Amino acid sequence: MVLSFLRRQFIDIIEWVDETRDTLIWKFPDEDREIKMGAQLTVRESQVALLVNEGKLADIYGPGRHELTTRNMPILTNLRGWKYGFESPFKVDVYFVSTREFQNLRWGTQQPVMVNDPDLSLVPLRAFGTFGMRVKDAAVFFREFAGTDPVVTVDEFLEGGFRSLVVTHFSNALKQSGRSLTEINAQANQLGEVLLPLLRPEFERLGLELSRFLVESVTLPEEIQKQLLEQDLELRKLRRKVGMSQEVEDMSRFIQFQAGQAMEKGDGGGAGLARSALEMSMGLQMAQQMQQAASGGGNKASGEERAQILQTLKELAELKNAGVLTEEEFESKKKELLSRL
Image 1 (tube, rainbow, N blue to C red):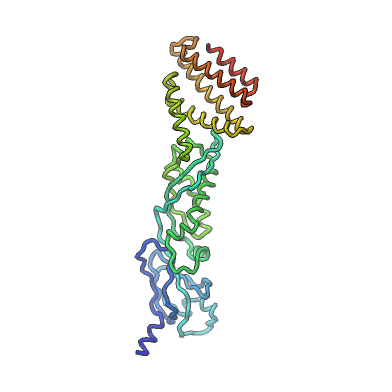
Image 2 (cartoon, helix red, strand yellow; image 1 turned 45 degrees about the vertical axis):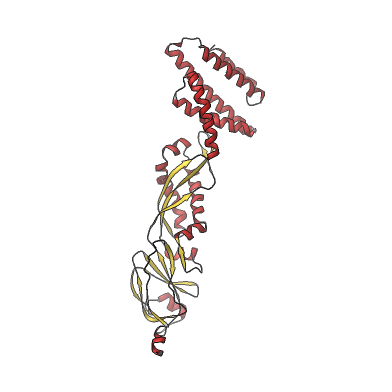
């Protein structure tokens, strides 16, 4: 009975059979028992075992079977001062770190990311997707994230602030990419490949490898989409009047939205943006009118075209009175429009 009790006080087999598939760090439960000198440590594929002495990382073991002796524990032997053979049991903490790849981890922007679009100034975007990662350097990862918790799952690790770190670096990488809103929308499935090399260094600094990064959706915030929908309804009515093409409608819709947003700001930069947007919109309208004239409309505007030109002149006058357009700009645009009557 006494010998059986004593045998239970010493650990002679150390291993981890992971049945959860979502555990990053697992501490071997020693229950205040000591490890027997010569104990067998089994490390399976996709695992790394760490021996921690009084909170300090000592020896590291990769996959295989290891016999824990002073010969096979060089760092711990030096820390303990075991200069000669030592056969007595000893006390250390053993942590296992999973090095398998964890896939389909979700990320998403809680707040819109302001991207400096090369064509359309600042654009607020929301993005969502998945990424995959694995522990590349167990020692670095353990030093960065080790705590008193004997078990650390992927969800606990991500919710501890790491998912927001992904979003932060994604936002920075997206801004550095210099891609326009049109390119982002058209190539969202390829954007992850572009951002992957920009994000990897931040993961490596933490002992992790970013194996994949996918952007599944890039959208405008809901309130802006609602405003665009309202703009779309108005432009559909206008398109029926002047026969605008679908391409002109799409461009004009975003231009008018940008101009409206800029005018609401009421500052000098906003006025400049509104003026640029208005000029682009007028250019599209005039191109439309010229195309209709070339197709048989003659040099004189039709009744509907005349009404549209007069309405545009009225809007120009309002912008001039609001200080968005200068007197010279107003007169120049007025002259161009009156030539079409």
